[in-house]
Length: 594
Image (cartoon, rainbow, N blue to C red; front, side, top):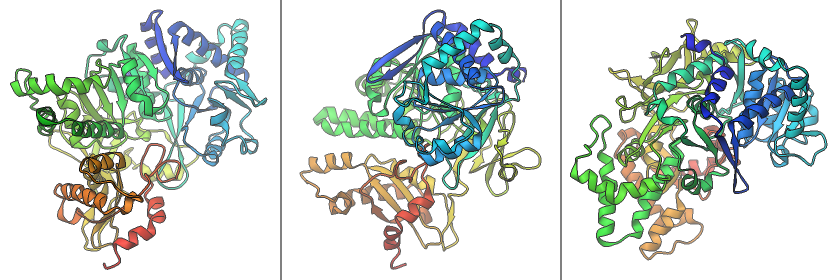
């Protein structure tokens, strides 16, 4: 475990040596890619670190970062860490009142924003935040009180000229158990909690996760990787540290709606994702076949349906005639949608449905999924070639322990477990056992070979009035696996049966019905033909769950659940209490004759 004694700046600066004098990262802004070479990145980061020092940031201070993914985000991150301070990442989607709470609760002394638009919600509230001494704008600002990024870098450059040894002195004084970051979990209920992660926490995760890569680390050297998940989430951030330690060239996209074009431009070797994107891609591929006809259409769906039988423990041989034919005629063309150079991906944040897992691996990628939480830095388990099992999140990474409590809750212990919740000893005690096990709040099981399976969130599980327990996420995954369903929320606490709120994938539904010669009428959620189509998809999903878990009734929603409406967390998890309250009438309508 001596590798865990390294601090994050040590790991990152060692990785930066692998880049030579070439490109380090590129950020897309206004449709244009803005490249940064490694020498510029290092110089600006060191100057920025000293610039933050001139603003009063000291070892142990907190610096908040409220920005989209960018090369500058990484500069802010490394600059803060290098002087012994801790950063406080804030999601771009978080509202002003939450940002105010985070700034105050974290004791942040500097608040970094990307631009005026990002600062808009916070501006009316910032005067009340007495601990913030300076606000810095990465892209410049029309507000006189905001300091520009370049201004802070310039002031740091002057300090470096006056005290050339100060940066190294501060960096070398950092200890592995010092606080590296304070990440506020979005949570599905209540105020966000500040998770304290140390250098050792995250460094241990980086080192151990590198051992589980689907390819040898040397294959990543110089490769392009695409980044679209928010760096404010520990999953993407830890992976960025892995990328840097391997010498990858990182490309930050601008908006996820343009990701298909970005795949074509970047031609990435690897990327991290969440199931939602892969589900949309899978749906798009299935619907695409509807545009074909005759033999072309038959061959297309023959190849697509072959993926449903994929077994990672017994994959088809490259000599298999049917597999070679499917690959040449269909799979190779699907892979081109990802730029033609993609070898693999890792999915996290939520359970990846077996259908998507099988599809991605069957068409020629290595698609693995992992499991973890912010409190665990984040990885607990991850799949790897030779250790992949359908429905599983893999085995533990090195030095990480996992076990199942008597009530089915997953517990974990090791160097990855957080220091605790900031200023909240009571909450910290609630999630920790006396002998150091962290209570994840998830329900799961471990098979005889050590593979972990996640069943659901402990708080999400509910009991029907019949006494049967239901794990809603499992049912929801089966329902939303349909190409015609965008979102599903399963309900049934203290009821006789399960019901669901369903958001159809209206674009795909309309294409299907128009192809059949039917023109739906608005509101679409009330259209009988749409309801019939969705009923068929729910019936298919019901065949894959226990009898008491089957969805007997459902209501269609016209609009999707969103972060802006408060129905989803920034990590796209459903805020069940909010949804249950908002759609109370619709839910009661399904149980009127109960």
